[in-house]
Length: 121
Image (cartoon, rainbow, N blue to C red; front, side, top):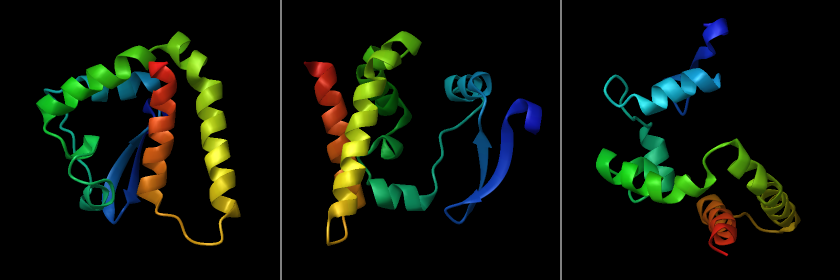
């Protein structure tokens, strides 16, 4: 497994495969004929039916094109890296300073919208 960047794991109560090399990730993520999208049930419960993981293949591809096109590629990601890092760091600091628990999904959605907001400006 090591040289291919593919590892067996046990996550969310299910056997899983972790892929770490960009070339292998690209091959798996882009080959819809040989690989199917699959998520543990707990992921659907945490993120909801209308999240990316709960969409049909066709709807997922459509939304992925709309949302990912402007940030695909090394140069585009380099432009957003500092902003994303700051947004996440600020949010983590804010969460740590709170006296009460946070609702994780709601907070992650806020960060996501904050990051997409910059793309729209």
